[in-house]
Length: 201
Picture (tube, rainbow, N blue to C red):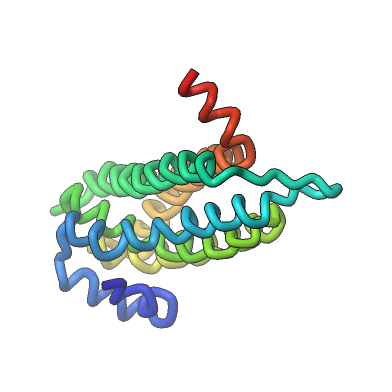
């Protein structure tokens, strides 16, 4: 399990080649990578919001009850899984213009591995300071972009110039998804009780 995590961080070029050779299935990816790594920001946020509380500055702290945090965490987890799928669909759409494009399943597998730094950056949510979480998110996003730029050309069997175009487009849409995800995260973890009550009511 999680065999490619260290490789993607330490030596991504070599790891991308190995991932491509394995021809991993979508089911295996989610069972052995995405489902586990996506739990990192969720579990850490749960601990942070129930034990510490979101620090918004000026002495303002928002702390959720265990039940409210659980509801917010479940929704957050499902959103993360959906975001991986959506980025995979974007890569598939961009790949259709090239000869012998990878399947949709392969594109989602690729997206799942690309998102690894973003998953890992969620560990800082265990002590949920807004500025710290934003800093970790930016660092995770930058390394995710790096993985995308070096991985796309080999994945699609295209030149680095074409890979740059595909990567840039994918990253642009991915950032939009990320911004929506971050906004939802703040709402869920910061105002979880009100949102959950309004949905139930």
